[in-house]
Image (tube, rainbow, N blue to C red; front, side):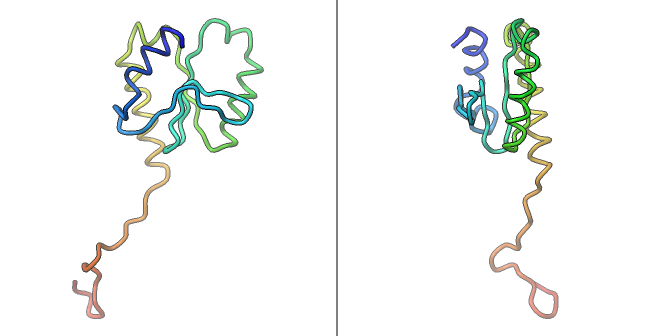
Length: 119
């Protein structure tokens, strides 16, 4: 685990953001740095080596998207420079994903309307 991964993991583990993240989660032939399975978000820490492997990252992201995930890429130094900004970005994405698939509202037990339209 890199120092950047360790720093970010210390803020993601234990459902500190209200959802469960997994570190180094395998998906197909790839391993996601951080994966939240519900809603389906992958957070990748990208160092300078990613500038030279854009085609690989594009294939990888396409695979993750084909599995229903959204990919959020974060610069590897961001957890050291602006951890709160990284967490806000992750929370914003989680909120937008949670809003993308609304949960149907079901009547509460015992609160269904009767034939006359009253509870």
